[in-house]
Amino acid sequence: MSSSLFDVALIRKDFPILHQEVNGSPLVYFDNGATSQKPQQVIDAMVKYYSTYNANIHRGVHHLSQVATSAYEQAREEVRAFLNARKTEEIIFTRGTTEGINLVAQSWGRNYLKPGDEIVVTAMEHHANIVPWQLVCEQTGAILKVIPMDQNGELILEEAEKLIGLRTRMVSIIHVSNALGTINPVRQILEMARKSGAMTLIDGAQAVPHFSVDVQELDCDFYVFSAHKILGPTGVGILYGKQQLLDQLPPWQGGGDMIRTVTFEKTTYNDSPLKFEAGTPNISGVIVMAEGIRYWNALDHAAVQEHEQHLLTYATGRLKEINGLKIIGEAREKVAVISFIIEGLHPYDIGFILDKKGIALRTGHHCAQPVMEFFGIPGTLRASFSFYNTTTEIDHMVDALLVAQRMLQ
Ligand code: PLP
Image 1 (cartoon, rainbow, N blue to C red):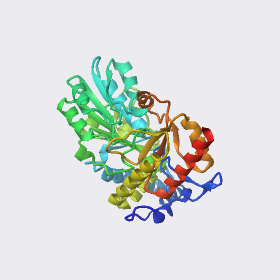
Image 2 (image 1 turned 135 degrees about the vertical axis):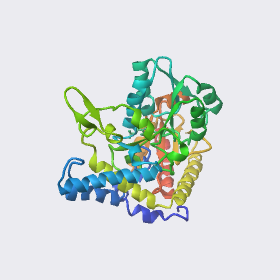
Image 3 (image 1 turned 90 degrees about the vertical axis):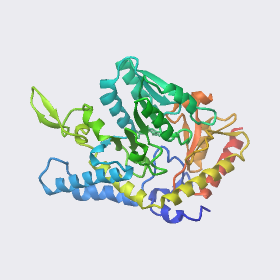
Image 4 (image 1 turned 30 degrees about the vertical axis):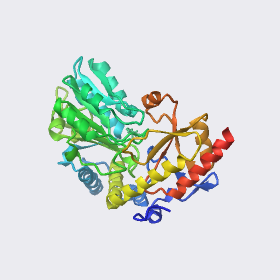
């Protein structure tokens, strides 16, 4: 049974992929942290685009190009409203979270950082919010600093206070940890950054699928996420940036659409956001992403949160019934993501047996190797839930884990 407020059975009807058997058992999809499944409305939007108005945008006078351009720019407005940004000019379409962070690191960091300047990240970053900064540190002589966490997987704010200071130029932090589920106190850390005059970026890849985000209320300089984690297609995402900052930043990549005039002597650039969207973008992806956001907007978000928190509490309780199972990351504020290990067993072996029973869990380091190193483990199993999951599925997972444990011991 699921929580009463939320009609999961009805919701699940919208997700065709969920209604299949894998290896002879009904699919249980608990890898939503890696990518979410897509409702029929999103799939239909993709088919409609390619079967009725596929065309290149911003450059055609013909009908199809105008329809595609208008849908593409309407998607920008949809995302603006989704994040409550002030203007559509503040919404840049990217390939995803990873590209958004690289864009800021290269366009801002490479041009403005000096030797000895400091970039602050947290101990629980995804590699996407570590490596782009390491690259720019190598290029500029800037230094990467890390806010530590404790054994529960919570950031140590007193240490953050000490770390963020006059040399800090950028504080770039993960909103919700993909490896641990921790919801970070981003407001407090942003406040520290503002006091020291540093820029701020939030990696919202794991936040937007679970709760509403308001960039004006957060008052961050940049916010990034990927469409595929919130009901949309892969290969497309968002960089939000405050307009006055985007106006000052140089382009990152050169090519079509990002220019105003080109001669062999000199090129002048378009205004943001087109200044940062060189070349033909992922037109269908952008348009279909907006359909995913529309689907999300139509949900009762209070009920979604209540349902997901119910799944988290229920699964945590059930998993703790298993001898030798240890949950990695027990922060007070968590989304419905549970990382765990079972004493003496390799996560991969367990994941393999679960797959034979149709259960999709993530195994490994979850692109967060420093987190695994901190806990002294090679990897975990991760169950990451979405609003379309049920407690019955959790029961299947627990049964399968008990079988795996018996088989492997
Ligand atoms: N940041 C976090 C917290 C993530 O969970 C992910 C993906 O798992 C990323 C960044 C990278 O997202 P993408 O691969 O869509 O660019």
